[in-house]
Length: 492
Image (cartoon, rainbow, N blue to C red; front, side):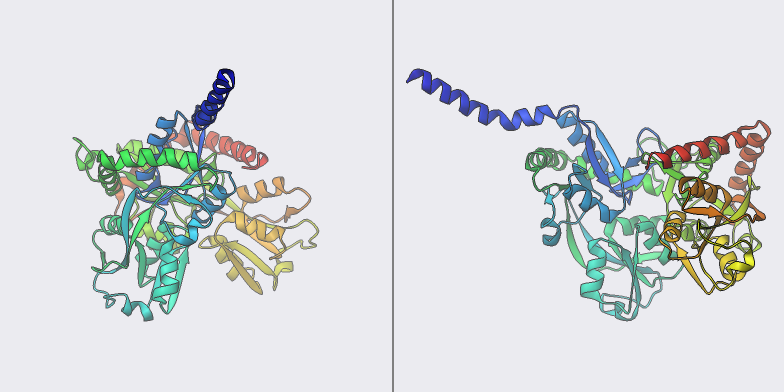
């Protein structure tokens, strides 16, 4: 009996220790966190190699990783993909200021609430829009995949709903008046108001109260419970409020400690990340020729660099309004753009090329007349496709990557692109796409500044001159062309 009892007791002890063994068995294993890095102040790009993202959620996640003895690895994805990656087990945790809803809780497991905010309406100062009811006749923007957009479509039902992939796109639509109003989280609204110098206002009455939580796979209850323990400490110790203040001030260029406002004011550079070798993503890091030059320009100005990722069409509007200090991503210098913004010296000449499917019989530009042509929105390639090729129909793609995929899927007959990107695509898809043997006259690329910002332009011109004279500029293009080819070959 005693032996049986002891055996039974050992078995019970083993069962009781299973969760602890499971947890300790994961110690040291990376904690994969899916996040969307344009949800300031919860998660945003920093431009720093060691820590590419920052924010309230990141502070919380680092505490969770430390508690579990697991290093945190961030997987930066569009907002809509966070839920899929977590539910499929391809990420351990999802974050990005995510509202807890019953519909989402059917797909994933939520942590306990770590922050409470509200959804608000933002309008330009002087707008006749004063409340939710007045939005019925307006054009209203919100971020795709968020509870903001759900609220807009199902409750407010404005005349026109404008969904955008990122919060930066929503803000830019307000700034250039493509939207009359926007629905967003209160802290994001406060950041927009600060960044644009009180051009906008937040309507007094909030639409809802939101509760934010982290996402877990439904089977991973143990990890969720461990995170909940840290979340409780995060709130009780006052760390949450300190984190909010720190990131709101950092994003607004306000002091976070003993430094003065001028010492910490970031040099904000807007980029679009699908234009190699100028700007692209490698292993969750934004890299490229333009990024290295931006780092050098910020250093010349003695200001910390902050990279903001936006659609290409929003780069110039954000610089024009002063919401960003510089625009980059291989921007062609044109008379039309030069009338709106200040350009740096040219740092590269570009050649336009045309991609077609490998079995296409086109040989000269005239063969493309009346065909379906694709190009990236807001680019001079788009102007060329519409005004020079006289296409029967033009497809306007958000990124070069989507445009090339459109060609591969036979949505279009040809795609107009810059030579560097076209050459990389032809090399990657050998036997599927090819470049026509036509080189269209070169363009010059420059960085964009707000009119009157002579100081930043002078710093950029100095950096360009120095790096061209010592050979570093040419070396940058060779290095990042090689690096992007490696990224593509690895399927990243």
